Length: 212
Image (tube, helix red, strand yellow):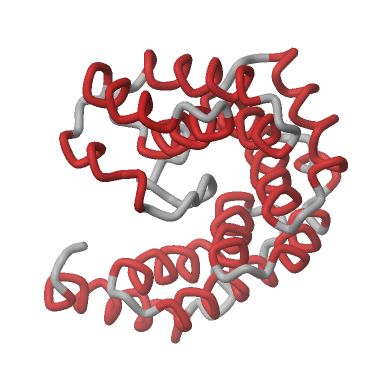
């Protein structure tokens, strides 16, 4: 995260623009992003809400706000927010993926499963494969979850959430000891050696682009 002092000029600039263009959704969204980088989540959320109020079709703002809800454990709010997207956007990959996380983490796996299956038929996006693995752990299909984890780690050995999935799959098979050896062989980050003590947070944001 950049120092706040380097972001202050941008905050001042965008707020100055809003004095003359208070209904500019684009400027509100830009300010939300700066507030997020500045470590001001409340202000960030306020600006995201204002962005969507002014322009309900601004999908990046809606998805960003949904992720904030998911991170805060407000899964029902996230689903509702995504369901309020314009009709042409509701079946977009971004909306479906985030809505699926909200359903999964909110305990509605049975509702999420058909959408995951549908997306997998179209393309095996890393985020969707991860969701499939999450569901397979819930469904006690640990072999299938392990296959998903290995597929993701083959594509990206630095995928922290895939490494967590790998550990849960091995645990389910009563082979937890094999997880550490697998990670040492195949993962690019040495810190993975101690990952077994980390929370199993599949939907956690590892990078600004959740598909990596």
